[in-house]
Image (tube, rainbow, N blue to C red):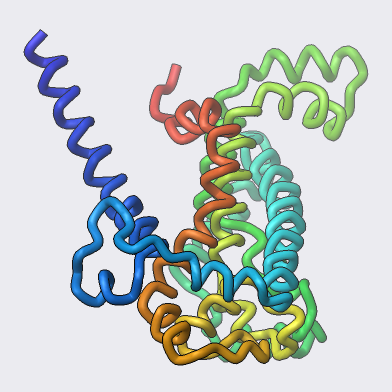
Length: 282
């Protein structure tokens, strides 16, 4: 009983420590400039104010960039899941010739890469600059996610695939009709990992895109924080400008985190089992 009470107190403390900064950010995003500058904002807004939200969300460039982020995230996640799933399924076959080499090539890229300039030259040489593909293709496979999926596939009963092969299913049929339906937990987890990574990504777009109409919302919000209007022609009074400067960081955090927060509850039931894959071996 005492042990459960201690665990409960510890977990409660962890939850409070986790939620407090985010609640503070939300409160700051709705507070007046004077209260923010005076350090009076804690868990509740002081002098409720939505000026920054109104200015940002009234800008058509913001919605264009937001749409770009949604498109980039969906397309990039779909491509990444396709490539990662196929690669992980191949690596899970212990009898595959050259398997150790393929695993080694993947693991090697976790520690070494060509560097920023060679990557830029490669993307430019392939004609991908100023296109969506410069954002979604260079980081299509995460080796960590690949190894997690590989570990999961290795834990599936071999007898199921053998029975499916006897029934006449080929390799792709086994993967599509047998393996994937049994892998909902790891698939949901990997989708979440990839979607969050691509949603929050800004540097590839900053590096490879010059057209403001192709920017993701992270670049728009970065420009706001840097003192720009993200390429728009909004003219604001001095009081409004001061208000925006005071809580723009809090507003940008809320606007970028909100979509992921809305999606997370739908995959949370898969997340716990997916994140502990490989922890127990039978």
